[in-house]
Length: 320
Picture 1 (cartoon, rainbow, N blue to C red):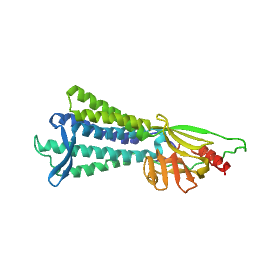
Picture 2 (tube, one colour; picture 1 turned 180 degrees about the vertical axis):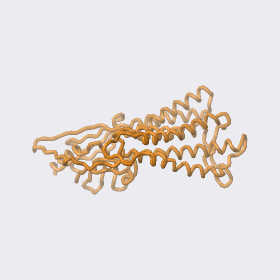
Picture 3 (cartoon, helix red, strand yellow; picture 1 turned 45 degrees about the horizontal axis):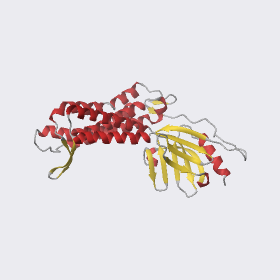
Picture 4 (tube, rainbow, N blue to C red; picture 1 turned 60 degrees about the horizontal axis):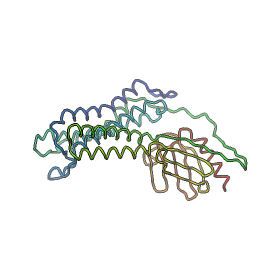
């Protein structure tokens, strides 16, 4: 069944989002059940002779919990009406990430529990479970409704300026992946530090909490962007830290157009850098694509890109 005009989440969409929370519940529940039996370190890699490297148990549970929590929150945010065009893809990739994290946790912790106290964990058939859970994203993807976009009816936007006139446009956007990841990092850091302080955990656990806290601050700094178009050109700046991520002067612009940005065509979500192209991709959907005089391209996701694209095109044409 398809949805043609309304992006409102239906019962099947809500059920699909709920399934992405299951991996987090599995990770947390198994950790609580196994916690007393788990050693300070868990296996991270296996070689021909057995375990080849380990990592602190606290770091492992924090990492896998953060991935599962971030995936679940991302899937829940996809229930918003504005996220309807990319809802199924969000369910798919968040489910993949949560399933992979759960499988990795069960393989490292489960192999340790089944080996028994003092025995070296054997990888055995655990990788089969890891591969099976990697496909977990197909469950919410198949449960959710398919979105079919209506044909656009709006006429192209034009901005006409007199020879002595200029214009300016500015907006702020949130990068969902960075915002969710920062909140998940803060939550995981707080949990790890509280548990470490209460139960007298190892120094490695405390270090893992501090690392997650610092990572959360950095992610938060890049979670909100200010995008402006004026006589200086196109500029993308981090709202919190004030770091200029991209500045394109008008004299370097060859052409500007709007397009539907597909993350896979631009290297994925977030800040992408490829030979001859760079982009800030927030979702599958509309955006502005700028072609430079040197042949390179820059793209950025925007909800309503027609006005900034038209203004930038008009301003750059006036400089030639």
